Amino acid sequence: MVVATCQIELTLPGVSSLKQKRSVLRGLIAGVHKKFHVAAAEVDLHDVWQSSTIGLAAVSTSASHAEQVLEAVVHWIEDYRPDLEVVDYAIEAIHV
Image (tube, rainbow, N blue to C red; front, top):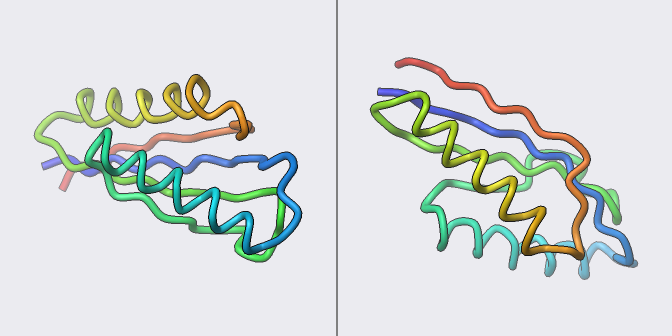
């Protein structure tokens, strides 16, 4: 079994309150979960209005497959969420 994780640093231009930030992230996390069937949550920068770090996790029998799924999530955010900017991301696979 392989567990792959991804940490994505985001900038949320135009967000002017924590309530608005949480609304944007709730929609993003729900969309990622629905489309890619991965676990997702905000993992850092909880109290910063225009920045966020989200964590993703995927379980697979193959490290390359799990990493490809997480790469696809990052590219989907870049392509289909122009209201967000991916600053950086890192993917790591752990063999269990």
